[in-house]
Structure formats: structure tokens, C-alpha cells
Amino acid sequence: MLWETLSTARDLGRLQDIASVFIRYGFGDLVQRLGMGKALERAGRILHRRGAERVTRMNTPERLTSALQELGPTFIKLGQLLATRVDLFPPDWIAEFEKLQDRVPPVPFEDLRLQLEEDLGAPVEEIFPHLDQEPVAAASLAQVHRAHLDDATEVILKVRRPEIRQMVEADLRLLGRLAEIAEREVPDLRRYRPREVVRQLALSMRRELDFTSECHSAERIAENFSDDPNIVIPKVYWQWTCERLNVQEYIDGIPGRDLKAVTEAGLDRKVLASRGAHAVLKMILEDRFYHADPHPGNLFYLPGNRLAILDFGMVGRLSESRCDQVAELMFGLLERRTGQVVEVLMDWAGESSLDTETMQMDVEGLLDRYHGLPLRQLNFAAMLTDLTTLLRDHHLVLPSDLTLLFKAFISLDGLGRMLDPDFEVVTEATPYLRRVMLSRYTPDAIARRSWGALGDIFNIVSD
Image 1: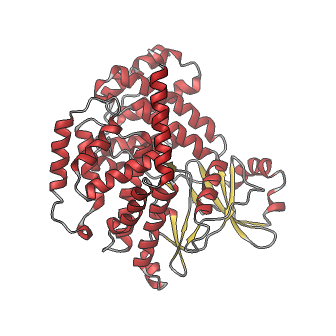
Image 2: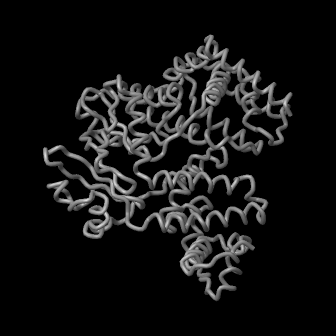
Image 3: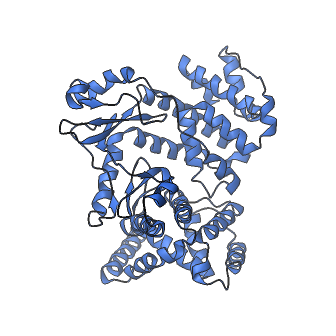
């Protein structure tokens, strides 16, 4: 088994931690089926098999989420990634994964000083004469401190935790082995595509650990909103920003969850909901490069009903053809065009076996549930949730570039309704969808598709 390739004491010790935690939360059978117990026994390690009475009061999603929380940063991020996989897990599982909190005690500032000064190339006080050593936020990968530049400009420093990359890489190695064994040895887990999930997790975490990547994403989105004064993206100070340090403009606003402060400040919650929706829809359907985690914790509300968008560690990208498919699917759902919806789903199924006739009947049944409702009364998030349930029933997994997108649409609906109970994402989205559909029939777009089709024909003939 693949565990035989484990060589370092660190990997063996971590494997023991993982196995012990999963056993304590009632997943002992899974530990044995994955061969973790035998691997540790062969290595001369003692596997703790203590149970815990409290897990008997928890359902399976709660037990799994608690285990992931206890195992630390990589596993918390795994759970947060699983929260985006609405095509794999039902709503009760998604709700539990969303509870995972990436909050940990901060690292004392003096333990960060050496790394900071290596990255700055100078003593901290020389660059930031005023720096608050108490962090304003602390997460598993980084913590945030407020500071001032020489000219009194307020900035924030997002500092990566020392040695966190080595810890994450060790966990990713073990998760990769777990995923490979799971697909081979545990048939019940194959439909969850564990190797693909771990591949996504590794890409996401490595990108998130590189703060320059996050800052490049922020600047790209800032450029896309350069002519919109209502959307604010913090400025990056590149002279001090690097892989382990992100220095950016401090935003003084009302946190996205503080609705009482929004009301007291005299801001218009309907306007905020509409502007937030337009920002997300523009990112997805016009720019095809979007903030993939649009929840209230990543927003600040500013005077004049402006919005500041923060934290670009998780972004999504759509190709032009994928954006066309998304627009076709959404229009098909809204206009109740069964054939159009099924055609897109069949494209996404790829080589997966799909019972087209049954899928057609199920899509018709889904659309019938919304038949007769005026457009303004459609709950599009509920419709998307029903669609993902249908995908799970047919064992159809969304392409990896779409999982974040579906979750972003559902999060957008929740964010809009939190601000404005009458918010309707359908009303906000329809103009964008129409523009995407119409753009397919411009002369340039038709020419590009024609040349692409000719290229496909040439490749077939050449073969």
C-alpha cells in the first residue's frame, strides 16, 4: 500500500494524529479501510483508539466537521473547499462545512519580527514607525496588523505564519495518499472524486500561501472596476509586498455583517444589495474573473453606499466558452427550456455515462415546480440548489471550474437577501445574461467559432 512510502518521522507522526482524531469522532472503520492503522503498526506507532461520548450526540456531518476543525489549517481549508461542492454534498453537509472557522490564537509579534525584517530588508520600525503589535485578525495561514507609513498613511500588514508552508505541504502529501487509496479501496467514496478534490485543494492552498498571487488578483479586479466609483479595492504597496507579506491600504468601513451600523449610518441597504450584486455579476459574466467567496466577512460598507471588497485569496476564472454555457444554462432554467438545460449538462458530463431520457424527465420535473411563477418571484438560489440535487442523483460531478461559480451564485443570493429581504438575483442577473447571449452573435464571435470548428475538422482529417 502507498503508506509504505512514508519515510519521515514528521509524516508518520502526522498520520498518527489524523488517524487518532478520525477514530475519536467515530470514523474508525474508515481509518481501517484506508490502511492507516496497519501502516502505523508496521512503523511501530501506537494508534490511540479512545472514543468520545459526546460524538454520539452529533450527526455525521457534525462529526466530520469537528474532526477537520481539530486537525488544523489544511483540513479546515479542505472543509471550506467541500463547502463549495454543492454538486457532491446535500445542503445539510454544506451548512456544516460552512461553519468551519479559520481562527486560531495569534503568533506573538516578536516571533514574526525576524521573518518580517527578512522580507522588508530593514528593521520594522524603519518602514512602519507606528505598528500595532496586537493583530486585528488571526487565521491559520496568516495574521493581520495595522500600521502607519512615514506620511501617516494607514496600512494593514498580512503576515504569513512562520513555517506554515512546510506544515501545509506535509498535510497535502498525506491527503494525496489518502485520496489515492480511497479511490482504489473504498468504492463508496469514489463518487466524491477524492483525488480531484485534493488536487483542487493543493492548487488553492499554494495560491493562497503566495500573497503576491492574491495581490495580482486584487489589482486585476481593481482594474476591471476602475471606472466604477462605488466599488473600492484596497491599494497594494508593492515595494513591501512579497510571497510572505501583503501590505495594502487600510479600509475604514462598516463590516459586512454589522447591519445595525449600516442602518445607523443612514446607508441604503437596497442600494448596497443591488451594487453588490452588480459587482459580482460583472466579475462573473463580463470579466470572467471573479471573487469566489463573496460573503459578508469580505465586505465593508462605505459612505455614499459604496462597497469595499477584500481578500482575493480565492478567485475563479471562466473561459469564454464556459461563460456561454453558464448563460445558456441560466437562461434555460429561467425560460423553462428543458432541452437547453439538458444539452449543457450533457456537455458537462463529458465521458460520464448519463441516462439522457431520465435526465430530461427530471429536468422537466424540476422546471415544473417553478412553472407559472412570475419572474420576480423566482428563487434562483433554490432553483440552483434543486439542480445540484439532480446532479448528485445522476452521479454527475460539475467541472472543477464551475464548483466555485455555483457556490458564488448561491452566496450572492444570501448576501443580497440579508441586506434587502426583497432582493431578487434573477432581476439583477437578467440584463447580464442577455448581453452574454447576444455577444455570441456578433460578427467577431461567429468568426471565432467558425475558425475553431474548421480547426477541429482539420485535426480530425489529419488523424
